[in-house]
Image 1 (tube, rainbow, N blue to C red):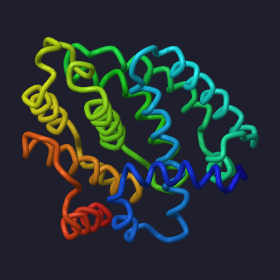
Image 2 (image 1 turned 120 degrees about the vertical axis):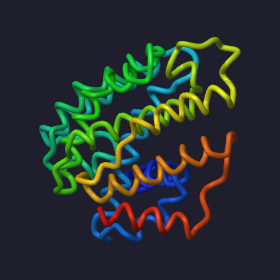
Image 3 (image 1 turned 45 degrees about the vertical axis):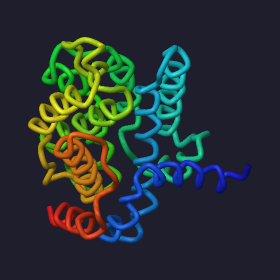
Image 4 (image 1 turned 135 degrees about the vertical axis):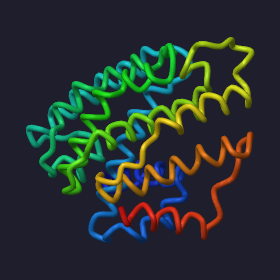
Length: 238
């Protein structure tokens, strides 16, 4: 497989998980669209390692490998196809590498939603710092909180509410529990108005997904096209 084909496979995998982006990226400057998708695809790789089912050792090894890869990016050396797009961009890759163990720790259920946010604060800060370098907009405390919220929403969707907040029983891991935990997550999910446009749009789409899930009380399809466009336009405005 060529480097170009391998890179496209990672980008396409992320796009398949986020079909909303096909419309939303209209509001991202064209020269930055590939960079944005490569960055989001990298974050998805981290989330996949966090949300692994079964034996966590392979996922822990994957996070360890990514830590070494990110440190190499700081020295202008990359092995992963995503590095072809991201590594040339000067960014605090070392700090992001140091933050990755928080994702492994986040597999254990938190005491409550506040504790779940606290455990991902350092990771959110590292992601915010990289995004400020990639997209040229400084993040704030709201951006850090929003990144933690989006990461927790991904865990809720992939692993269920008891894996996220463990103050319930396994038998409660159903729609009612999803609504409780999802509602609590939405209450602490700020709108990152000072974040880069790319993050604002993706965060708005992710928040919309969870809001629709909680409002419907059951899994729902992707939002209608007009609603997606309005959500992305509103987020792009800042």
